[in-house]
Each structure stands twice: as C-alpha cells, then as structure tokens.
Length: 102
Image 1 (cartoon, rainbow, N blue to C red):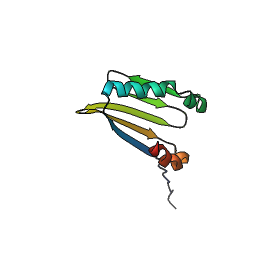
Image 2: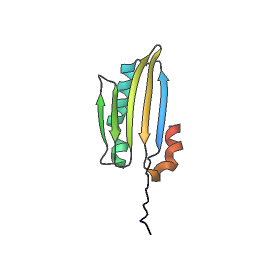
Image 3: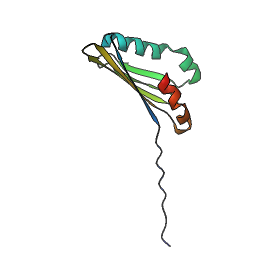
Image 4: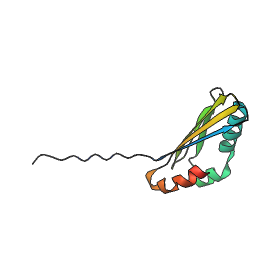
C-alpha cells in the first residue's frame, strides 16, 4: 500500500462591500476609519480588535481574533468609491448575508 495524503484547504468566506458616495474621498475615509477606530461595541466583542489606517493612501485594515477587514477609498468623478472586504472564519460563514446587508 502506498501512503495516502489528505489535503484540507481552509478558505475564509469573504464579504465584499462596495458603495459610492457623493462625499469627497477624504471625508468618506475619515468617517469610516473614525467609526471603526472608536467603535466601543467592536472592542467589547473582541479585546484583540485593532485598526491600522493610512490617510495618505486612504486605505487600512481592522483585525480581530474572529475577522479581518480591509478598507480602500478611491476618488471618482462624483465623490468616492468605498470598498470593504471582510474575511470571516468558516464557522461565521452563516453571518455572511447579515454582514453584506449591513
């Protein structure tokens, strides 16, 4: 008998949220990054929650023990486009629809 190998690929479900706004890119970035940095509910839910934002590139990330989110804001002709990509662990995949609706 030859040895058998099993390969398990663990994928984290991703939620991609895209939104266009008439606010300037700087205003949109400031509002979202400020909200994520100061959200006491997220900090209560996950003591390992931390944010890292770069105003010059209008991008950043928020990480906790149960998720990771990347933020990118780009300027468009009528305001700004906001993109947030959230990686959820497999056991929270059922919450994907709820996150997308939020």
